[in-house]
Image 1 (cartoon, rainbow, N blue to C red):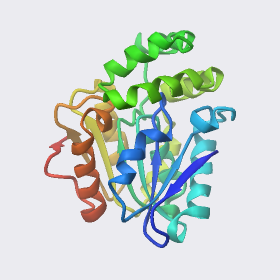
Image 2: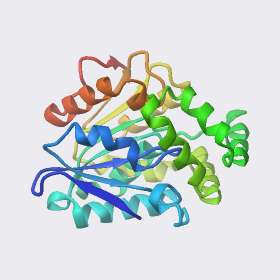
Image 3: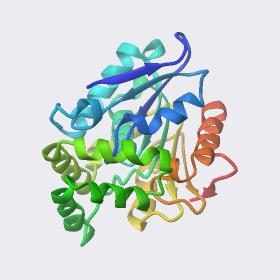
Image 4: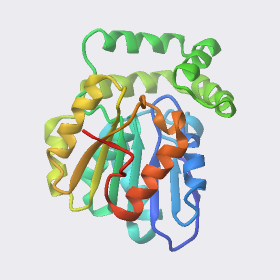
Length: 256
């Protein structure tokens, strides 16, 4: 799994885990806005620079991310930041490897899975992932800034579709309760966020996370949708910085 490393040696590390339609580049701006931290930004198997690597399982990827932190993180630990697929992986990593975690900041982590008509519709979309028009339309729906659209489209066209199909089915199945129960051993602080305008299944999953992690809180990003790191990157940065410096939910967030 390829990754980009930046920031000063000896500073606390942040592991940024990207979503399922993009690659590590989605975190570039956030990492640059936190120059006092050491950043680890991987491209997950099947995505970006790791598109030639087959997706194994969520647990396997979370274990590999924990190994990345042990090997390259300052003191073998890191703050874990994840959105969407990255949020799900961040939760699994924290549950299985609490020893590498300084703190956890996840948003849009649908750990309950996705069911009903949304599931077959989502899986069917993979058939058209080879069409440029699909990705340009998706970029508009995600409210991506204009300077990110081309990179988003190029990344999408390069995603390994077999890997994406396996990943999506696993995410849609939901994270098994025995895996989530590992959060009970987590001593690090955890913040789970959902956009106020996200689907109900994502907002409901907050309880599955904070109901297990002993030092945790849940909140909602006001008026935000799923990819609010792109929808309002300045709000996202303020909320993330507040968390990293105080280990508490920003007053700009709404109670969940």
